[in-house]
Image (cartoon, rainbow, N blue to C red; front, side, top):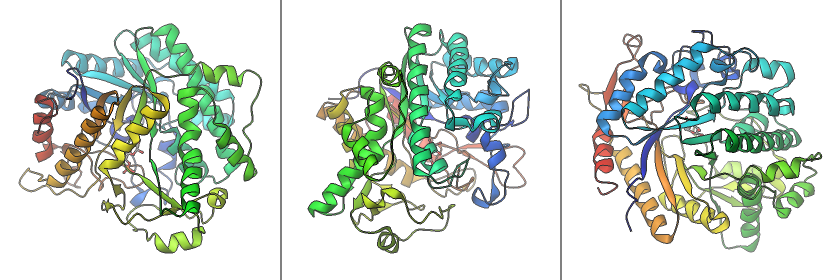
Length: 471
Ligand code: BGP
């Protein structure tokens, strides 16, 4: 079997990572504008203030997409560009900007995939009630969604509700690596329950406003492996699967938490704070597809974190968490997998893991899947206007083969968005970790220009798209 005829060969991005124009045309501050400006919070104190200036260069970038023949482009809307204070007054220039981007994409036969929330929460809502920690956010998020549905609902078919809820909550509320830099398991679970409700409400409203559209969340799916066949390692792996995957996937796809997840949380003293009406609302949030962001698999065992940390040596080229222990250590700890390769940032390279991810979702939920992110972060070098990124081509090729195999296995995959089209700002790694098909020159002298160069992978992906997945 081959890729379906209308397979969405795409690429992805997020507002804060590309737009820049942080204080321009009425945009309000997001939590990331504030957070990345505090020394020590990001790698070498880099910020997305200018990023790659997509705000002013979107036409140039979209013509590069057209030249490549890209079928779909995933981008996110910046909530504080639409609503500078998170609610209340709408910023007309923000509304207009995304109309221009969407129109340009459509004009060039590129399917827009719109992400509603990719982490840039309006700072005003964080200040007023602690952002995702308060149920007040459900109403404000719903109102923001309704504005987008009304404005763009007749132009955009594919919508992503929340990007990687599992990552922004675990890095923000467990590992102290994202704003608001906290570490408390009960707060983490409360925040997630609130985000689940907001996600369900957003989907419920979507059905009313965009009846012909398709919507789903994007989940950062790291399928779990057991370190060994020791039954205790297998149990640890299953615990990790409940708490690191099903905690979200089941709620999205089935509208309820698995009883095992609830009981495992109880065993470490954590409860999910249900209120009247929550269970009914979650049932209304079943998506049309599951968005999957796939980078790596995760291996687990049943020893102590101290031992695990000694074994899992970390590389110091990113901001590291200083959290030494988690409540979940009683149930599982991360372990090293000696059968996989690693990137320059120690991220596992495991194309089979993508096939496993797609199969597990299909087997448990039987939903269509849109791969909303996958890619290789690497140090690229620009020489005479060229970037020879054969390592990226190799990586993507292997992952595309894995998708093809999963389709043959019986998975319904709607499309594949690589991360990313252009080089962009990496939340914890600044600008040296590059993912794009298009190199963006941020050398000091040329930074003002932010000149774009096509990498070797640009021409390669063009061929892949043109042949619908045949190399
Ligand atoms: C995902 C995010 C993206 C992007 C990507 C690469 O978790 O959704 O926004 O950043 O990971 O991550 P990084 O930039 O840390 O390498």
